[in-house]
Image (cartoon, rainbow, N blue to C red; front, top):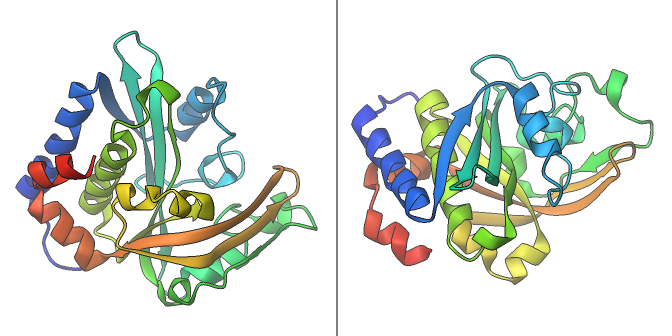
Length: 236
């Protein structure tokens, strides 16, 4: 996307989501140091380990190419986390990036196990080129679930991604069971498709068969420009 970003629209969009988080008893903050992020997530006993996409020991994230969000409750406990990073793929596409394992490891030849593999069958992923904002590692503590916090976290991640990168696509990967529970609609994605990532990472003890969900850059811009508080509240 090459059109100008309206900073007031972004600010209002983020403020709507931040206000709702505060009303739910969560104070949000954004960080850039992924060493710190991993230290935070490792201390959460009920969260599954952070994937190598967001771990500097396996996948270096250059300055300005990633950020994370942490929500703290009124007792100073971690209530929610999420991470985002930019994949800049002008000569490739997201499907190829996944299948090469470069989405997970900075150097697959160095870090990947010989039996590691990823297959992407989703046709749309093969059309995703340019700047891809990838959102993942979303976790919400059990006592805050059912209050719309995932939608709030996704909103903050989208607003910041738009402001930092104006991406061509924003996407994530999600287990099919979440679609069966209609949770994906609460995350605010317009599109989803099976076969996004059939993944095995042996040393990480990861075996996934995830759908891909996404917005294109125009849909992201329209979402940020609208920043409708009542519309957001109606979806929580």
